[in-house]
Length: 118
Image (cartoon, rainbow, N blue to C red; front, side, top):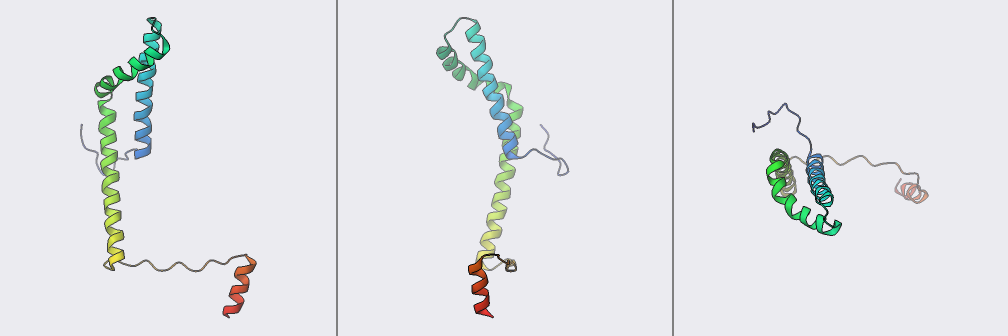
């Protein structure tokens, strides 16, 4: 599998996890349905399907797993950069964002406090 170029838009982590999870659940449902058609009781069919679906998903969903690993590594790298930037700001090494301007409030108690400051 080729690595994505910076201009390609990759799906986010949540979308990739949802797709992979849906595929795994669909595989379990398919195996369960096949076993029930073959005459197995529902509970036994579900238990066997759970066991059989794990190795099958390793083979069948290789591409989805690769996409999931890429999304996880990108998220991990982004969070590491954000964490380092935050640590640098806390140490005083990085630029300090300016304080946001005060927000006017309609609360009566806030208006009273504002009158007392002037």
